[in-house]
Length: 154
Image (cartoon, rainbow, N blue to C red; front, top):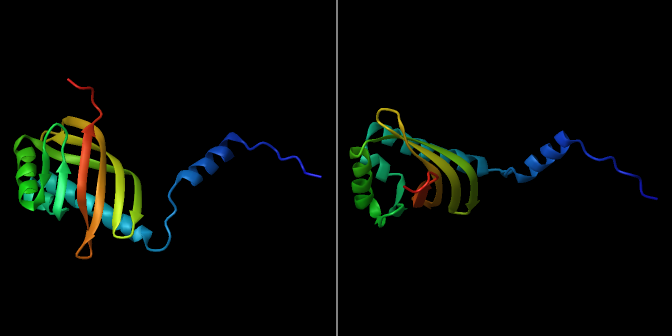
């Protein structure tokens, strides 16, 4: 005879759902997550410093920025020019937040959110991003970078 199971409390159900949807990293994955966060931190520091060379440096050699409402920007040289244009236009900082990260060997996919601010600290844009990561020369780098605004079209 089966024994009746008591219904789970709301808190228990919520905790189980959270655990079920939270990535659990096996040995070694935590270090990948940390390395990827370090590159994101480098991007944020480089933007704050206005250093387009460092900004381009977070990408692979044949990395691409798939910017909204514009052409694909390919390669280190053009990425440096692109990011210098953003700095010259007044972009002063970015806050990148990872929502989801999945590793696939020497590749990873990051889904996240961003907030762009002016040099004066005013919010310029808020949106979402997806970055395809590749391991190049033993280092994690952005390979394909795409983002779009969450603000209504004007």
